[in-house]
Length: 187
Image (cartoon, rainbow, N blue to C red; front, side):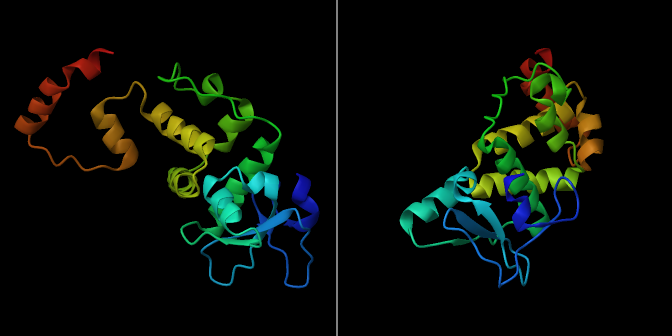
């Protein structure tokens, strides 16, 4: 990782401590600040950070801004998003074919990306929210593809169980919905 000299490494993939107040920031860096109370921010190369359309828009609107507040993103999730952006700064994300050809993410994308989204469900959904909020299209597509791979080939009952969704349809309503959407089961 390019920015490793600016972080105290705790875990090889995602845990990084932000810089202290006395640490210097280079001109080509931005500070991304999560919603976490007391967050000092995470220094990121500008060319990496502008992978986020939100960040790019802020920077283009105010050329002097170096700190970008991201009030809708938790620190732990922001660190993962930064890891994704750092990896893909010089390695273009592989386009994901739709519909998915397999439920195995390694068949759909690169090994690195498949491993990146191999996370608990709550983290995956937080990554989706962060990618959407920060407007990082390749990350949003990757995380949504992971959810699609989780439901591919499953019955509605299995999907409900997987995502802890309560079935609030009466048997008659459920049968009516199935009849209306019979085409979806045929594909």
